[in-house]
Image (cartoon, rainbow, N blue to C red; front, side, top):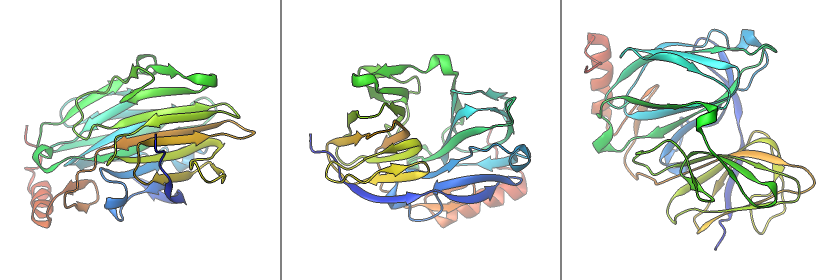
Length: 283
């Protein structure tokens, strides 16, 4: 396997979203070609309820998918088509906004006052942007864990590792979404189809993500790889945990404003005009 070299490494940066939620943004609202088909990754780990309790009140989405993965606390959600529920630790919600949905996401702390998780935005191709909205939602116990060599584990939300497949299916960008944990002094290798984007976001410890570079990258680090046959990660004296995300780039024009992502400015104008006129939701 020709292991991919690192293209760039950066740190997520503090920002605020919703009604005053303090979070860290790994990427988003800039050059989408670097992470295509993914648009944004937010890290909302927090131990101060006053910094997140106001949440994300009612807001629209069109033309994309939002993927929420929880570690601590929970997020209660409701939407314009009658869905309501909560995402608990270890659970994931893969929401396909498609032609349009209005929803809210309200964080709730655990007993220690903590709330933590991640939201990834994935683009939809032009021929799927106006598909009916849908959800795929799975609790922690429904998401399998691949037991790999030397104690390495990978929780498989979507895609396949070590013969273990995730429960999220029928996503047009053929993504992989994994929560990888590595003990100290171990190696993890994973094949990624050539031409597919691959990125890692470190959430604990530190690891080496380049086969020819011994630099260690720790918490809040975003690693983007160049092309190749797969990725290889090594730990040193300490363990590491990271999210690994892969997907097939769309290579389409992106017209993006706030929570709506289309292909042209005209489509964007239409979406916001429909919001104003009350015709955004298509039934």
